[in-house]
Image 1: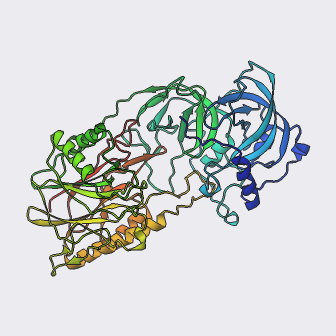
Image 2: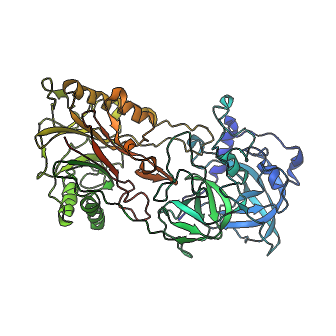
Amino acid sequence: MSSSIPRSAAVAAVVSAALAAGLLAGSASASAEDGAGVRIHDIQGTTRVSPLVGQQVTGVTGIVTGVRTYGSRGFWIQDPTPDANPATSEGLFVFTSSVPTVAVGDAVSVNGTVTEYVPGGLASGNQSLTQLSKPVVTVLSQGNPVPAPVTISSWSVPGAYAPEGDPAAGGSINGLTLKPRTYALDYYESLEGTNVRIGSSRVVGATDPYSELWVTVKPWENANRRGGTVYGSYEDQNTGRLQVQSLVPIAQQPFPKANVGDVLAGATEGPLDFNQYGGYTLTARTLGTVVDRGLERETTDKQHKNELAVATYNVENLDPSDPQEKFDALAKAVVENLASPDIVALEEIQDDNGAKNDGTVSAGQTVKKFTDAIVAAGGPAYEWRSVDPENNEDGGEPGGNIRQVFLFNPARVSFTDRPGGDATTATGVTGRKGHAALTVSPGRIDPANAAWADSRKPLAGEFVFRGRTVFVIANHFGSKGGDESIVSHHQPPNRSSEAKRLLQAQAVNGFVKQLLAVEKQADVLVVGDINDFEFSGTTKALTDGGALYPAVKSLPRGERYSYVYQGNSQVLDQILTSPGIHHFEYDSVHINAEFADQDSDHDPQVLRFRP
């Protein structure tokens, strides 16, 4: 399977709309008069958009360097006699829609329309792929040598990521002349469609269900001890990352399974493509061999008798229809890898029939199946608390009704039940000076706030451990859906989803401040899938006024991650502590995100402290 989206007659519509919007405007080329005698580098030009976009061209010649028979069907051609301009690519994708009839090594002449295809559509903000559409192909000869590949290596990829977008063009870099010796994105764009190769490279993104993985050609770039590449700020992008797919259908040659830290050894060679899910992608005609470096799943320390262990774990849309194997694997992780925490805040617990959209909102069967599996794995008999959401009001899969759930070990910690909490009733803060309490427990924080529209509402609970009250707020903030990719033609990219998470963070921060106003040294933990980085505006809003501290920052920089996306090891899941929690141990327990075989796509987080 490929993650490339099939292209169809919609290509022409996208290009027409783009031209009308002025987003892909180009100028005519003097060397392309009447569209005849055009070379590939004339079509590619010196910017991201072809100067011949929308024009008919004839007699475009090249050697076939790769053929794709699935997904976005077509083939790549390359001019064996390049020009002297490093900004102009000598390769080009020819979109055929049907299975191509050419073979690697064919010399061809192509007539067609120059188009700019935007994977994901114009609204995605993605860069476009220059291609020939509606081609008429003539094979001139067969068995020709493929043009020698351009080697992508640590020294060839610039350290700077991308130029600043042109303010006059809405922040777009489309119209800027490429500087491939200065910017990594410009370098990759200058090789769009070109036959490229990488040598032995470390895997930084495990094989996914779509038969693709990520490597880095810069082994030292923000590396961590487990083999990943850490994403530490918006200003320090990891330029050496490259997605790898195979041109050989998996029915003929299964795609190798690789974990982070493994090595894709030997030469991997093929045309450089651009797609919706990852941007620049080496579509391998020849794929290297995966060398297993033996990455192991981590196990956290067991809490001491007088330590409270609190964990957060996104269990990825868990519902009773999932195979028992998933429940068993997640349960084993809680018992063995997380050392049976006293409190576990779960995210993405679905209702009792999963994504069946019939109005069901209860999740008792889901949680029972999970807690039973924990007992079977040798863990404690966890009790649980939650608040059922209103049907289809909290986002996620339609009908799934995901929510946060507290598990707690009654042999170690008690839950303070205060009735009255439901989907629409807000919990509040009460108590005399020095002793805060929740008005309802479990309860939701400010569920009527527009910040939580179509999103999970925070779940607050009041616990007692060794006579000390501990407040835990379980969260699952809004997703990054709608954000532009880091390979967007807007630089910096538009991160529109941040606005909602900022409001959500402000709401949670305000609630924590209410608790601290009553009890300055209250033990408060804000936990969950925050869906944002430790350096983000969301985290800054959560910590406003010193109300909270992001505990992940207590770890070395190389350990700060809970998720791997497009080869970037990054923070999404967090535990934040109130000022009263002076000493703690924090662990991001890496058991999922770096592995091809995952029980969830998130790594759980654990914090241990003495109340």
